[in-house]
Image (cartoon, rainbow, N blue to C red; front, side):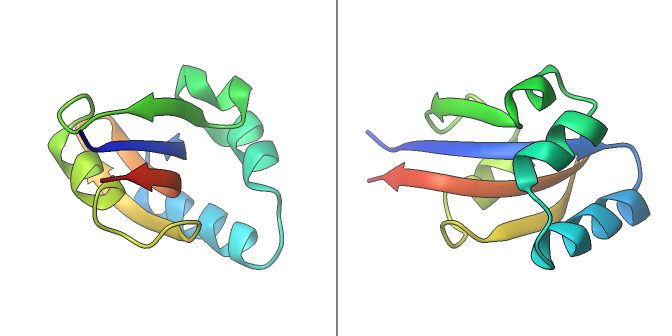
Length: 93
């Protein structure tokens, strides 16, 4: 069964999401940005969501996590919760 581990940062605006993504891409620490800015409770853990299977997250999130490149910052990804920056840290087929 497929499984993945990922971390994310959840914010309310696309612009905010793009700004944080740019900071991370230029060297800011993902976990620190998550702790400071994420609206998700996972922010206090550096955005870590642990391991999960397809269908455990919302569709838009799952599509990215189970198809995008590993260890590369993805986003903004819009869901009903807001805008996400996602980093897939591992995935098994």
